[in-house]
Each structure stands twice: as C-alpha cells, then as structure tokens.
Image (cartoon, rainbow, N blue to C red; front, top):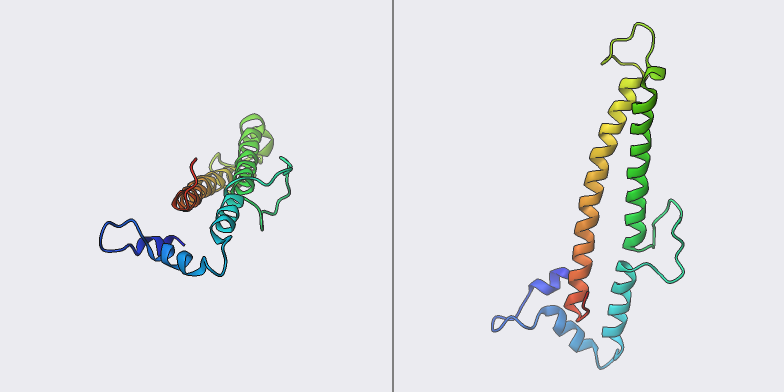
Length: 143
C-alpha cells in the first residue's frame, strides 16, 4: 500500500495508483474503503477486551502487543542490571579479575547486548507505527 501511494498523478499529485485501484474495485466491492480502514485500524489499536498481560506471542496481534513485548524485554534487561548492581559480589569467582570471563562479566555483556537490542526494537517499532499511521491518514483517518 505504501508503494502504491508513491505513484502519484503528474498533475496536482492528489491521486495515486492506490486511489485508482480502489476506485476500480469500488463498483464490485462497495465496502472496500471501510474494510481497509478497519483492517489498518486493527493493526494500530489494540483489540477490544485485550488483556494487558498478554502472552509472549504477538503473531496476529496489534502494534500495541508489539509495544508491550518490547517493554517486557526492556524490563527483563533492567531486572538483570538490577541484579548486577545489587549482587555483583555474589557473581564474582575467587581470584577472578574484575573484567575476566566469569559470570559477572557474562551478565554485564548480556545487559549491554540486550540494551542495544531493545533500542533497536524500539526504533523499528516506532517506524512501523509511523508507517501504519501514514497509511491510516492516507485513507482519511485522523489521529
């Protein structure tokens, strides 16, 4: 859909290839615009009655489900960092250098890698949400 939006008419730029496709299908499928809006809205907004806890899987879910999954991932990363901050001495092996290959160093590396991954997930989620809103706005929905 986003690629069809880019193919605009030469004059004025108000009509795109997507508009032409929808107008062509409209006589045989009069509910097409509202169906498209509904499907796009279901991607951006959580479904009615959705539980806040949710499961680990987001397949078939909404962007809100993805946002919750990213937040849970970040919370788990913060939990490991808190464990390191409070109980670092418990993870040190006798005679281990502070930056050695022991359990504490492994946990610290895990937190660093997880934090980088969480930032990347948040950025990609923001891009997906922005794209979904652009598609909704394209079909006449307002924020």
